[in-house]
Amino acid sequence: MQAPRIPTVQGSGTVRLEFTVTAAESDGALHQMRATYGPGSPQPPAHLHPAQDECSEVHEGALGFVIEGVLRTVPAGEALDVPAAGAVHQVRNPGDVPAVVTWSTRPALRTGEFLCALHEARESGDVGRLLQVVEEHADVFVLAPQPQG
Image (cartoon, rainbow, N blue to C red):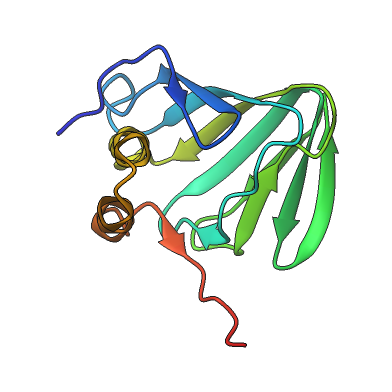
């Protein structure tokens, strides 16, 4: 299944994704999006991408990345790379203005499909479906082990 060219995917809370280059358009080399993180956007669960390099280039505002437990703020005009099978990470906009970023994964793999399926599962409110989508797309997104408490 190929991800459709869609104008936007509204993520959890205040994250908006616009696909700009899909796997089909790049012969599988690249999935790229323009992401807008609203002020105070929620932080996704800690995760990694087992077989993809990820790059985030910030154009407006700033993003806070937590990589292996260390916070790094990336302001407009800077970029951050997370290598394939790299560090466990999270990203959010902790500021009070929107943050706009070009977010790329190489190779594309099934990133587009994953994000579309995740969006549909969130919209349905079915937590079981949400967990199933994450499980079915372990080639592009893996939840980090959670600390036992």
